[in-house]
Image 1: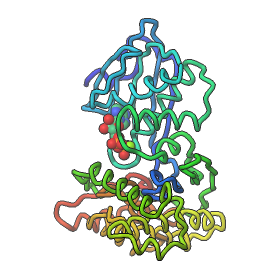
Image 2: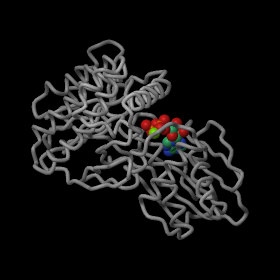
Image 3: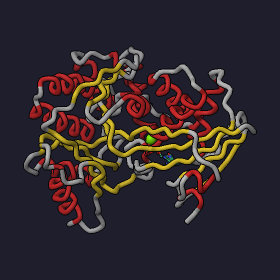
Image 4: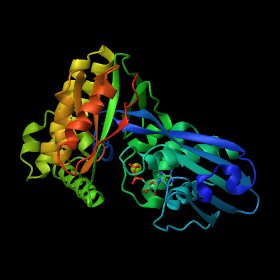
Amino acid sequence: MTAAALGFEAVFGRPAALVAEAPGRVNLIGEHTDYNGGYALPTAIPQKTRIEMAPRDDGLIRVATANVGGGAQLSYRAGEEARRGLWLDYVQGITAVLRDRGVAVPGFDARIASTVPLGSGLSSSASLLVALARGLRAMLALPIDDVEIARIAHAAEHDFVGAPVGRMDQMAASLADESTALFLDTRTLAFERVPLPAEVELLVVDSGVAHQHASGDYKTRRAECERAAEALGVPQLRDVDAAAEQRIASLPPPLDRRARHVVTENVRVLAAVAALRAGDLVRLGALFDASHRSMRDDFEVSVPAVDDLVESARAQPDVFGARLTGGGFGGAIVALVKRGSAAKVGRAVADAYARTPGRRATVLVGGAVS
Ligand code: ADP
Ligand code: MG
C-alpha cells in the first residue's frame, strides 16, 4: 500500500485540522448549453470527494490523493504554482486563483479521497476543486459564498488547468444536493433548487466507451456553436429565440444542426423544470428522450454503444425516459426510473449490453437495491 492510500495521519504524521467535501453530479437535461450561456439541470450524486487538511507555517503545500495510481503525493510552494499537466494542477489552480483574488494562501497538507469515478463524466474534477475551495474557505475563514466558490473553481479549471469547460459542473458541485435538481442559468449563475419527486430515482450507467478524441471534438463543437452564434448575429446561442427556426435552418451544415440542438435543448430545460414542478414524470421522460435524439442527430455527440444503452433502458418497464448525459463521445446515460426499480433496470440494461462482445456497462448511480 502506498502512503496516500492511508489516512491523513498515517501520511503526514499528525491529525487533520478540518475536512471538506463536495459531491459529483449528473446532468438531468441541458447538455452542451453551458458554454452557450444557456440552462442546465444537474443534481448531486451520492459519490463525493473528501479532503482532509491541516495548515503549515512554511509555505509548502503537500497533497496526497488516494485516487491516482493507487496513491500519489506531490508538493509545491504557495505562490509558485505552475501547470504540470498532472492531477496536481487542479489543486494548484485553486491556490493560484485565490492568490489572484488577494488571498494570502499559506502552506498546508491535504489528503484527497474520492468516491466519484475519475473521468467518467460525473465531474470528479469539479468535486475536487469545490471540496478544496471549501476547505480553504474554512481554514482561512474566507468571506465567500457558494456561488463564489463555484466561480473560483471554474477559473481554476478553465484558466489554470486549461480545460475549456462551461460553468455547470462547478455550480453543481458547490450548490446541488441529491433531493433537488439545480435549475441553473449558466450566464447569470442564477439558480433555483427544484425538488425531485419522491416517486422517481435516477439510474446512471456508464457505457465503458471513452472516446479518444473527446476533448478535441468538444472543442470543435464549441467552435461550431460560436460560429453559428456569429452567423445569427447574437453573442451566444442562448440569445436565439426558438421561433428563429427558419434562420437556424438557413445556416450552412453542420451549424444548422448544432444551433438547433442548443436552442431546442434550452427550451427542453425550461419544460423539464415545469414538468418537475407539476410532478409530470411522463412529460419529463419524454423530454429526456427528445434530448437524446437531439444530441444524437443534431449535435452528433452520441455513439452507437450509448444509443443502445438508451434504447435498452427505455424498453424496460418503470423507465420514464433515458438519455446520454455529459459531454458525450461515449460516457454514461441517465434514466428516470420509478422509485424502487433502478437497481433491477440497471442489471437488465447491463446484462443486455454485455451480450455484445467487448461491451461492459457499469451502474454508477442507482445500483443499490432500495
Ligand atoms: P470528470 O470530471 O468527468 O471525472 P475530468 O477529465 O474533467 O473528468 O477530470 C478528471 C481529472 O481530475 C483526473 O484525471 C485528475 O487529474 C483530476 N482528479 C479528479 N479527482 C481526483 C482525485 N480524487 N485525486 C486526484 N486527481 C483528481
Ligand atoms: Mg470534469
